[in-house]
Structure formats: structure tokens, C-alpha cells
Length: 339
Image (cartoon, rainbow, N blue to C red; front, side):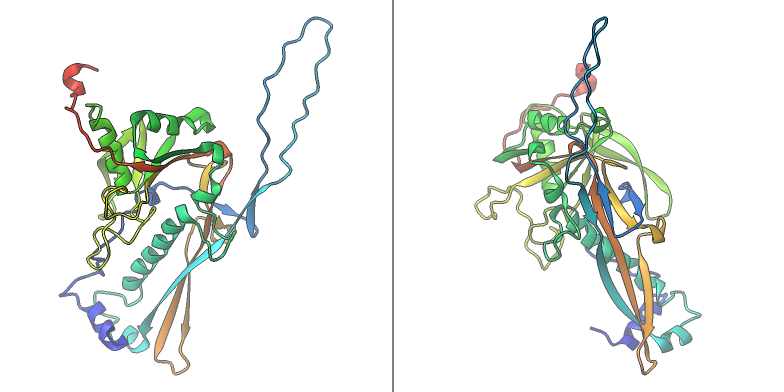
């Protein structure tokens, strides 16, 4: 690792680069659309009701049967976790490199925030087992009645449709799919085994040039599919040279025997959403700086106090332990067939 002085010179050299570039970034596609809401206090509590019964018809001169609405006894409580990282900047570098192209703090801040997002999206599915209750991931939030376990069998189109239908809030509309690269390949192969072409739609996303750009996005029955490399990350990114590649097929002889998961959920208030302290308003990150006693170095602490919460239990469902289908049939071109 470079000394703090050498690091300062590298960060300030506009001939090499104007920014720090990550060689092997993880894809966290859902981050651009996942909503966060401010929460006053130390937790968010949702009070829900049992299954509502339909109203009754009445005849002439008949009384109306009482059906006072009662909440479930136990509220669901969602608490904050705090994710943190830090970096150092030479105090001298702030002075002598102040006229150079790169600011010593901001050039590191972007990647510090990226590190916090990596941890958040790792916890998004798995949760925080070290600090139970601070960050309940999808595995803890999903109701057992909304779990479709394929038991390491190939993914089918019927299973995809069933998983999507398990999301009932907002009449099942506005559902999204969330999975890793293996899950996306499994969705593709589920179409190919039936001789069908996977469906795509045009969506607009922010791009690195601070503009919006159209992208073709995989969809299932109209629901977009978002890929997250940190979702069910078995042993690091497939692009990491120093790490073990994620097995192409969870049932392969050299695999760990772990199937892939495909999540279905509706996002927004009273559904699945993120939480941030009300004091931050719409912000997600807190930055503090302290100087070492000798005055040589500034230490920056960057934190992300956040979590996720689930309103209605029917906002979230999952297909677990799905395997990529192995056999493929001839593709059907819908434009030619007129289907």
C-alpha cells in the first residue's frame, strides 16, 4: 500500500487519470430505482391486519353484521443498521495540490460511497446476522406462503408466472424481478427450452455522463429484471481475477450445491422500500472528518444509516433453488409468427 504522500501524488496527477476507476465493479442495477423514505425515530413499525373477509349481502329488514377491523397483535418493526468506511488524506496534500485537477477528498469519496452501497446490496438479500434485527434482508422478510422452492430443479416459465402471481399488492401491478447473473441466464434458458424468445422492453437509466440513456431490459410478463452481482454472491464476482468464479450451474460437479434465487416484489411505501433517518431528508450518507493529533492527516468517516422495510407481506415473493435448464429448442420469432 502506498504511503499517504505517494497516494496524494497519484490522486492529483491529471496526466494518468482524472478520477479513480474501479477495475472490477459489481453490478447493482436496482440501486437506480429503489425508493428510500425518511423515518423519524429509531425504527419503522407496520401494523397489519389478517386476511379480510368479503362483505355480506343483506335482505330487507335485516341487521348488518358487525365486522370491526382489528390489527394483528404483533407489529413488524424495522430498525436501522449503520454501514461505514473511512479513508485518509494528507493535510499537506490539501494545501500543495489544491490547484491540481483532482480534489483529494472528492476523488476518494465517490468510491467510499460505492463501498457502502456494495455492503447495502449484499445485506439486501442476506441480512445482517452479526447484528440481528438491525438489517433484516429479504430472506427474513419473505413470508413462508410466498416461497416457491424448486429444490434444485430447472426453472420453468410456469414457475416464473407462479412466482409473479404471489405478489398481490397493487393488484399485482408494478412488480419487478431481482436476481443475479445466474438467475438471468436461467430465465433466458426457460424461454429457450420452450422454443420462445425472451422478451425485452426499452427503459431509461442514468449513464456515467450524467445523462439518461435507453437500454433494452429483460422482462417477465411485463416485469423488468434487475441483476445484482452481490445478490447470493457465492464467492466473489465472476470478474474478480483473484476469486473463485460463481458456478454456471448450481448442480455442476464442481459447484457448492447452491441454487439461484429469483425475487419478485412491488416497491414503494407500504410495500418494499428503503429507510433513511428523517434528519438526512432524502440523503443516504453521513460524512465526518477528524484530524490526527499531530496535524498530519485528515481521517474521513463515511457512513450509511439505512435499512429496508416491508409493508404488506404479499409485496414480496421468491423462487428458491432454481437451476438453469440444460436443453434448448428452436427459437420462435414473434414478429414473424405474429404471436
